[in-house]
Length: 240
Image (cartoon, rainbow, N blue to C red; front, side, top):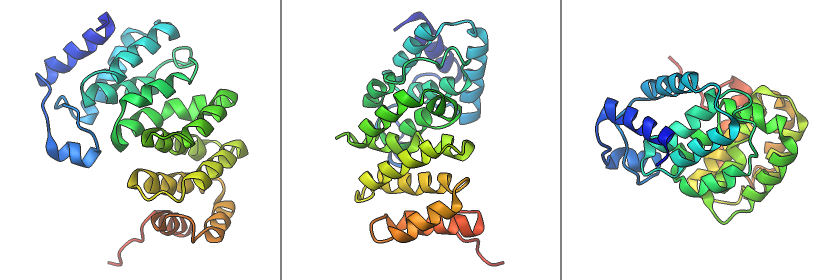
């Protein structure tokens, strides 16, 4: 355990004591790791405070902190890694994204994957380092590991909502085409999510894509995407 990693673990233990198992949350979040009982707001506050205290940390050192957290024993350490990425300074998050190929091997379930692969970090870095990310996203979509296949889709959700870059749309649809036959919830819900994200800037294109591929796409993706385009929400509001 590195000094920085140890510092963060001690801070978590100070707040929550020793990590525990929680079968209900493990089932819901899709993992089997012990966790510290720290709520989301407190963990985000911890991430912001730590990054503020270490704002001069160079990228190569910051990457090692993220690595230690991702490979840690608890769910909370893995979640904290994603939260730190999202509040890091530009130079700290400008590392080679190939690191994610290694990190994803230590993550299980939708929550661990999504916390690392959505938010401010991919929103900025995926378009900025597009050449590297394009290769990685294609590679992930072909992976035998489901967490990487999910990552190939959800890594594009935050960038698509914020950035009308046609390259993002093209890659998203390529990955959806490759994965839309899968029945696992980790994939079907990710497909729905990325199509809904793309519809923010490309409603006509996404509606045409969904209606043209209705029989191939997961039913939840068809239903939620078309509802999102029509109503602005993924599910129909109940009449009062």
